[in-house]
Length: 448
Image 1 (cartoon, one colour):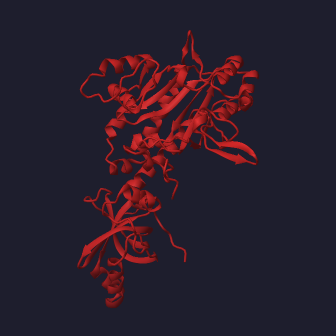
Image 2: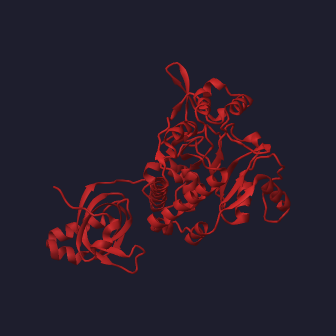
């Protein structure tokens, strides 16, 4: 039998009307003649209230008692069709509740493992396929969705074309020690670390381009910021300077934050995210500081009482504590620019007059969330790029197509990559990156 269903998120448009919702029972309570159901359908959570006298009046003594008893004994995560009158309710954070007039069980749920009590992280991760149903995890996924939506919207408005880079590749984009290798009909192949090299080819054909998909890094890291499989948004664009590229990246990140504020306000509220801070990050200019100035600042303040980072010298890379201190010092997302060439990728263009530094930037998010974007101006000279590939111990044959791009109308161009999960943790206020992706892949976890 066909039936017209509405989503919980849309109930505000049906106040005073009888509607039917397909949902799951997240929780229940009640006593005597009243029963409360916490319902969810993916769009929102919503309370339904059932009154025993109303059921007896509608269905008669025997059937009414049977219906009401069914509601009182529904188990957690049972799927149901619930019919009722939508009413405004000032006591509810959602603002509405459902006066239940009928219910039909679709699928039973027996002995649901994730009960309202506290559970350990390992248990929750083992049951990730079910943990995703919780209020908190649903809210994080809604924020993730809002960021993805805002990304496509931003790039479309700014003249970018979606370009699909391959996931299997015969070469590494950056670090050959972090590759997942597989056999490709007798030849070695690697899971993509980045779509950038192929995206540059797309840029030469289509102008401004972006891609969005999973990438893989075989990092043996257990930190709260690292996954072995994550989603990356890469963009490449011709005829822009490094400074203009930073302007574009700043506008992009601000558009993502605004997109979440617009599309997922209830998710932010549930997670108790400080939206005033998010609005501040949109309103204020991002800070830009050179790598060398950042090192000097770290050295200047390393004896302060509230610092917990190790001493760094010029030429050292930053650790997470250094990144946290830098972004918190400025209080807004901060670009650190012009890192040493010694620990950056071979394709980055040197700073004019200073070949030991490259025209690159990492965008550090405040509140301890670290790097969310890495970008640079790309090397355009064939001979210089060839020397850099050799200097990094790479085989030029593996980068033949990439080098070839420099022989046929090479132009100044820049690009950047944003890690989706890191952006999700930052905007949502989530402390561990494992909650920012539906099924996290980490050093010791590949299931479920």
